[in-house]
Length: 156
Length: 95
Length: 127
Image (cartoon, rainbow over all chains, first blue to last red; front, side, top):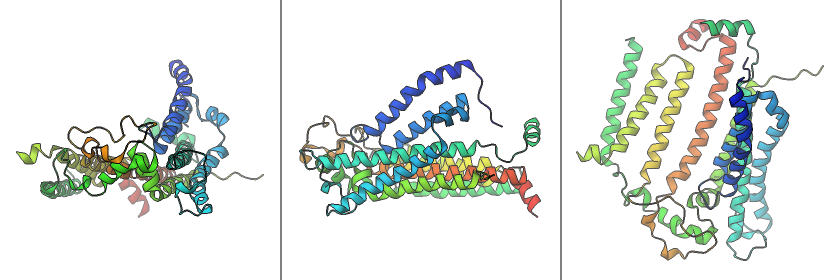
């Protein structure tokens, strides 16, 4: 059984630094087209923020903040945002994923492609965040291991 | 040393020898005339900002010029998450 | 001498690849095999990224172009490194994370069934 790591310094520090980590992750996702970053990188940082809270406080604490069904819902929504923006370009007589044909109110005709890039990076970031948290939650589940077997494994 | 580990070590050394023999034809470190940087990469570097209004060439290539690859990339990581979920989550009893 | 100094990065990556390869085929613990696979894949990613470097060039982001439009003819190609290997290796990193996640999930299931992660003990229990 994997318990929380009972240390005052780690709990205090993780509580303080969790909010800047999430802010930094959102910053990296949204500034993907002008500075190093993008969807995958920002999604991993957002997922790592939740994993850090889970290591410091235990998985139950983190599941009170973001429910299991919401994690799966976010990862599905990310793929739908990406495919949805691509399919929306079909409605305005463009090709699939041809962002130039969307009727967004910007002056420069190629700035629409910049906004399309930002939209799909948001979708990618949500999916990657959901999958990182979901894989971590699956791997630390104690499952069907009997307690006396795990304690004898620790003695060896 | 156990015989299987010795066989593994010999395989690794033979593979390393063949790979080092093939390194002769690779371009030097920092060569700007390397074949990877000559054919389609100058087009991406010069035309990215004009076509997509994004200063980052990597994001523009990943999300605009090669957006189809990134769509199925996202699907791959989604499938990995679903595979872990199907392998490891217990069913809830409806009692 | 040119072979060692001019191409020293390939020597490093081949050594890393062979370390990962040896770990995958010669270790008996399943978790060590997964770690060897990760080392191998990291070496491959570094190998591809290092092909695209240019001497004296900067990162592949256009300078001073945030809200202005830069004409394409005034961009020197030799000033920015090749962005294509970085793009392809983003995909490779994501694939590596997925494979590692599913491999660790399978190792957990094997442990629940056989109560060991050593390969020879599993083979002994199977036969």
